[in-house]
Image: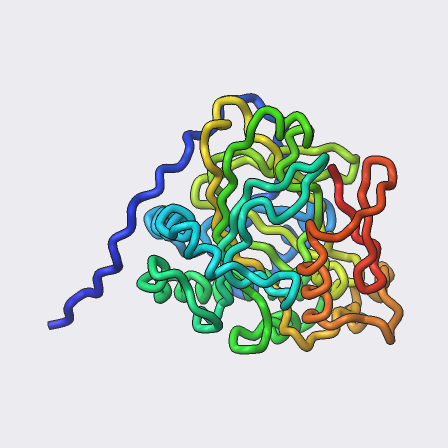
Length: 363
């Protein structure tokens, strides 16, 4: 007789109710990932994903293989590092971003400067997809098998499927990008649990309600599990900020710098930010579950010029050939600098140079 394995008991996390505020939402495509099981289905989805990544930079995924119950369990787990670990223990497991260029461990509150002397009210807990890379707080340890299963689901079922669709969109062999994102390779693809806490009226005024400045992600693909607190906004090509709508049990997908570099500018790393939620949600915390994907550390982020599509439309090079960074060099440069470096004001935009590339932050 096989005895079913009982998962550890975890206090349930109660999310905020959806907002009733009428917001200006972005019109983002919805991709049904269940159609990717056949070659014909992938070709059809690739057209949708290519259009989304070239024109919007964001899209939703549904039917991604996790049930609503599994997703709820992940949010219950995501809350543990914040609510069931003491402040002294959090400091023991704090990340060493400025030293190592790695987010593994906690990104504690008030680490990043936002504006006018105000620092963030945001905590992360980050785990490399290889959850044995470093030690974890005591409350997290019994949950590591489930977190590892979550990482593998995102990597093999979601990320690799998206990468195949993006390769088809570049008219490259389906495994081109997958082979740059090996699960057992050296790299920093990681699970991130994230929690925003409400701020004081004085902090909101000093930052003009911005919780996290407009930025691009530095990896290849970001997978966000949709949650109900409205706060995420994307910058449209027309220069307008639009809200990202919550869809139950959907994933929100966007490309980062590394994908823009590899695709020669064909796929867009879209600027996005986090702002104060609407009034009916301002008393709630905002809990997030993410999978941040990066290519293997040794991959040079040079355009895939063998792509027939890039040969037709042209390549936007961000580096001279002999100065193209590896994924490791780019992630370490972005991680050590973010929220810590001196920025140069250029009108509404703040700028810094990282590895010879002008990186912009939007307030």
